[in-house]
Amino acid sequence: MNDALVMATFDKRVARREGRRQFFRTAGLMAGGAAGAMVLNAGSPGLLGSADAAASPALSDGDILNFALNLEYLEAQFYSFATTGHGLPAALLTGTGVQGQVIGGAQVPFSDKVVRAYAIEIARDEMEHVAFLRSALGGYAVAMPTVDIDGKNPAGAFSMVAQAAGLVQAGQAFNPFADDISFLLGAFIFEDVGVTAYKGAAPLITSKAYLSAAAGILAAEAYHASLIRTTLYQKGQVTPSIIFKTNEISAARESLNAPVLDDEGITLDGKVNIVPLDGNGLAFSRTTGQVLNVVYINPHMVMRGGFFPAGVNGLINTSAGSS
Image (tube, rainbow, N blue to C red; front, side, top):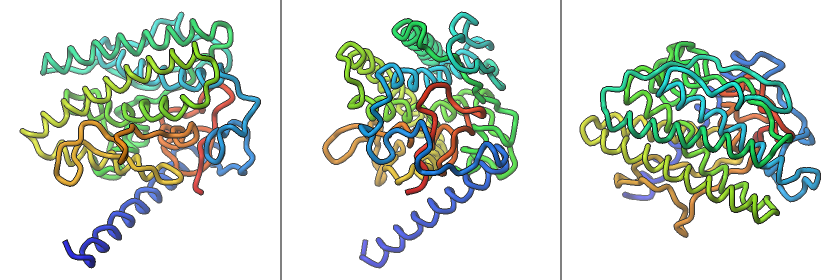
C-alpha cells in the first residue's frame, strides 16, 4: 500500500470517527435534554483520571469499588433479563444514593443452546460480582441507579450505539433481546468496556485486599469479553456481516473516548483479533472518565446519559470530556 493510499485511509477513518462523535453529541443533547447533556466545567466534582487520577486524594478505595459496582449493576441486569426475563433481586439494589429502576429488558428467545448456556453462566457471574462488591463495601455500597437496557426505544442507549455503528438506520431501534446475534452484539457493546475499566482502576487502589478483589473480577470480565468475541467471530464465519458490525461497534466506542483510545474489533488488518492488546501484549486501560464517556454515550464532560439516564451513584460520576 503506497503512502498516498495509507494517508487517504487514515483520513477516512478520522472523518468517520468525527462523524460518530458529532452523532453522539447531537443524540446526547436530544435524548438527555439540556440538563442531562450539559457540558461541565473542567473542575467538576467526580472526575477521576482524565488528567491525573492521583490528583483526587478525597477518593477512597471504596469510591473506586462503588464506581465498579455501578457498572456491575448494568451488566448484571442485562444478562439477568436476557436469561430469565426479570432483573436482580430487590435485596441487591439498595444502598446509598438514589435507587433507580431498570428501563426495558426482556428474555431472549435463544435458538442456539450454546449461546444460551454462555449467557446463563455470565448472568450468574455478574450477579455474584454485584453481591460480592456490596458485601465488601458494606454500608458504603451505592444503590443501583436507573439503567437503560430498553431495546424498543429508538432513543435508548443500545439504539444510540447501534445507529452510530450503522447496525440500524437513524431513528430505528436496536433490540439486543430479539435473538441470539442481537444479544451477542448487545453484550459486545459494553463487555470490553468492563475489562478496560478494571485495568484502568487497578493503579488507583491502595488496599491489597481490594486490589486482589478487583483483579479477580478483571480476570472474570476478560473471560466474558473473550467468550463473546470468540462466539461472534465464529458466527461471523457463516455470516461475515457480523464481523463487520462488531468492528463498527468498536469504532463507535472509540469515538466516544476523550482523548481517543485504541479500541479494537474482532478482526484487525484482516486477521482474527479475539484479544485486543497494545504493542506490549497488554490489555488496554480506560480512566473512569473515559468509561463514563462510553456508558453515558457522550464524548462531552457530562454527569448522566446513555445507559445511566440519571447518572451513576457515588463520588466518581463525571465523564472525561473532550481534551
